Image (cartoon, rainbow, N blue to C red; front, side, top):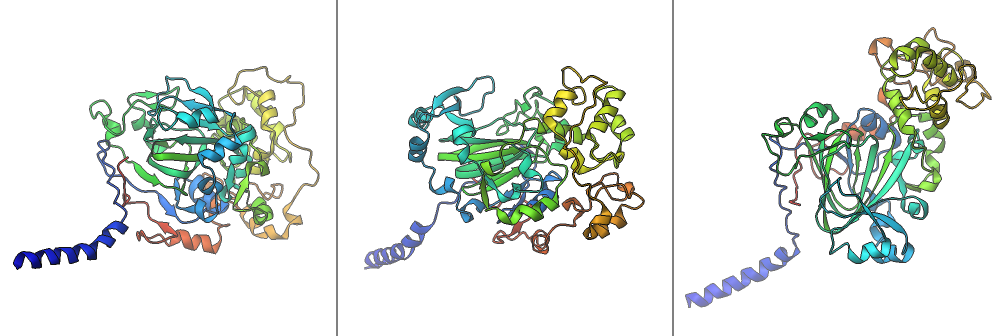
Length: 475
């Protein structure tokens, strides 16, 4: 009798709890790391694609990563719904693509070239990983998110790369010289990030300077060989389908992808030192959340050299000729002086942001390779060089009543243009009055979002970044 009752109770309990058990997704195992001494930190997490002004002011300008969760699904990215293997076979069957032949990145092994059909026939069973720049026919796969549509970002886009593989694939710990917007279309990527501020510790041992990568195995650090790296502060992100991650230039990162099929596209863009808010106010409402790259086009690869030049000038205050001459360490004094004159469109003795972003960078490298630290023949010193378009109408504060507030900031400088660096010189840097870094162009909605930081994981707007992820996965 007792045995029968026990069996009946067991059956009832099984019936009651079985549906609950079947409906639960198995919990992901924590990411077990034998790497760093300290636990990981998280990065800022929001539930929408940031607008360009907030993106620049709070993340690009201060060099802070940003995780945007499930944002591609809300804007109906076709990469999530349509870009299956069959789709790729039909649309690009014989397109040659660059393929790595190891699932654990080995930079000593050269890549190979296969057609899309060849790659798709073998990548799930062989050591193959598609890492291909999306230009030419495949450039229609490049859809630019709205945070890069204006303000100058749209002029800095350098390259877009498709990453497609199967199973566990991992990169070396490395950094890139370009800002990076990485979007996950399928599968997962576990990302380890280290602030570029820790450059000395990351590169102290086993670092290949020429390639910008470390020989360390971050999953199992040799504490004796890499003592400084073992004690470093690090960040962790787990990207899922529909997520995007902004990785600032210079930040060290290691990617580990997983899933039967995982696909991502990243967009590299040259670092932007000045956000042109006027441009956004004019064009932003005309664009869709995702715009094809054909709307903007890829920028000249030489834009990287503009960014490097501005790295030397960005904290120097007003850029008069003497400041530029002393700040640069390439070319002769005479050549630096001539370069200043070639860029100074308004001929007012001070370089504005619009002048520094307005000159033709390709022509500048051809005429002034020495200024950019490059080899090449320099222009004839007797030749007048102009690197800007002719002036049609010179703007002034008097002609623009809307800039009356800026007049109070740029006192005693009536010759300066509205986009010139107008702040207290004691600050030692010069964000412009319309630069989000100075906090003047953020919308109330966006500032409310960023100021409502919470540790509540259910908040769809933003989550704090100072604690490890609550949910991790062993990859």
